[in-house]
Length: 221
Image (cartoon, rainbow, N blue to C red):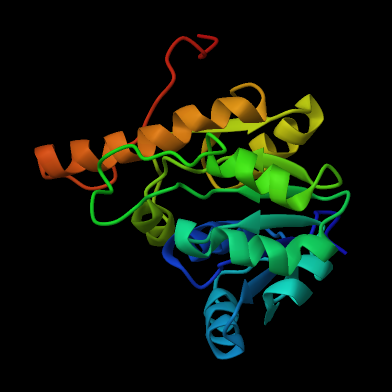
């Protein structure tokens, strides 16, 4: 036993999900890749086995992955957000659910377009009910940089209604080689979700890839 919580990454076959899962597997966390396609989940999990420093990653359908995980990470597109929340809802009571979702609405993804609930994270909490402990994070980190395995010069804003839940996700950010920053209650997640569209526009204007954020004034030196 690693002593680390098992992480179910729902959407672990996508760019962000696989990037995070790979870093956590390398850090020795037990990882379960969840997907609607078992074949894709198996392929993604087997690919991660080459970097895992602990147990080989497993794979499962979304609901089974959520049931097996101690912490559930949701890394899915906004278009499938509600449906996948309904899939995992029976299996996440009492668990931290880390929602990375940004409400991007193609084709104008560089324009902030927030849902009626004010944010994807608040929508997730409402849909899952109060039994789930939704924490929002990893909105502004470039998936390609996570997948590359190189250092990423980007902070992770972490939002949640309980300090201890935020602290658990800050620790996951650090395990992935990032700096997690306590950013207040779940209602504040709207700021990071909106900022993603801003960063997409910045990337386009400056013809760069993976612009991120850094909170200044936190270094103790």
